[in-house]
Amino acid sequence: MSLPIITTFALLFSLLASGAWVFLSLLGVGIGSLSIFKSIPVDRILSQTVWNGLSSPELVALPLFILMSELLMRSRFIDGLFRAIEPWVRRLPGGLLHTNVVGCTFFALISGSSAATTSAVGKITLKELDARGYDSQLAMGTLAGAGTLGFLIPPSIIMIIYGVLSQTSVLKLFAAGIIPGLMLALLLMVYIAFADRKRHTRSEAIDENIWKDRLVNLPALTPFIILMSGLLIALYGGFASPSEAASISVVITLCIMLWEKSLNLKALMAALIGTARTASMLGLIIASASFLSTAMGFLGLPQAISGLISSFNLSPLELVALLVVVYIILGCFLEGMSLILMTLPLVLPLITAAGYDKIWFGVFLIIVVELAQISPPVGMNLFVIQGLTGEKLGEIAKSVLPIFIIMVCFVFFLAVFPEVVTFLPSLMG
Image (tube, rainbow, N blue to C red):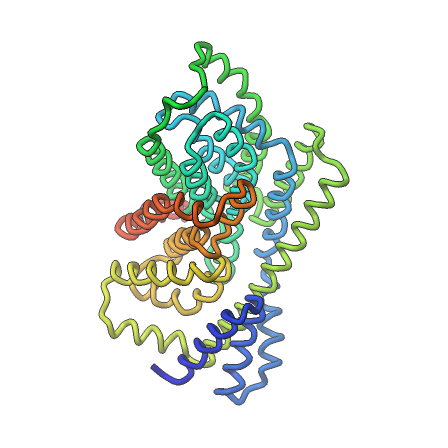
């Protein structure tokens, strides 16, 4: 292994281990590596790369989708969603545990954030499930796993970032996530049906008028249907770009909050501040990751690592297995977004050389990043659930282990049958 590769990774892990902010670590590695091994004007490369990395038109959608998610978390949307879902899943094997999965699936369709999906749905479902005698381990585990659908089901914030960095159509990435997202949701519901063993301990009664409850509560889905329809028609009807569709979604969300009387100055200011914080954090990481990618290109690291792995003569499936292991290990120490931005310049050439499509790899990468969301010690969804329940992180991590295994198996299923991912994008030409 060459000296530049060893030095670069030593710098990276040293800075991350020091507790430095991720964007400072990425900048430090890029600046340090170029200064040591290349006689080039680092300051000019840094300024140009940062500008190019943040000036992509597709990134305009990022703060808008974040704002929509922040607004939805402060609306009454989730209360209505739970009331509408509850009568439909009550008699399924596993009962109301399915509200975690179905609620997260619905919210993911209009959110784009894993942590926001977990938090918004968990605020309602965890209290209800605990009050009705459901097993807390199952409730926490299924919520943590289902919350990751916020990354996979469009509109996804992380898909926008991947599309910009990999120069892939964001609209096709959105389409690619639909079937895998719904399949993963179904797998989680099947797991709930088999795992729930304590139904007889609950106090919920069998309602003879269940169809009346189902029909009476259906109007609570009206805000969701309006928002989802507006977003999907704008995107896939060819009427708007992802950025324009995000703007439309924010306007619809504000109108819904006005209609349900949940929009006030306090909620609006909190949503704007939350959006500014999240978008600023992502902007810093995107800019620093773009610079690190450029620095790695100057040092020839992608080509060197590609050559090293190619020398192992791995089959495409073996390469996928290796990447899954590497991402699971890295996910124990790095937040999901940082994980993508740090590794994409190195991994994308390998996966395309193995014959996999960039759109397929985008979905694969998002699922392994979802694994990072539920991996201790830095899994974001675990922290969200800890904040909601006060449980120890170890207990929450233990509850999510079966979901983790299901998602790893699902990754290999998609590697064997990539058409599951590429079918819908192929229809778009």
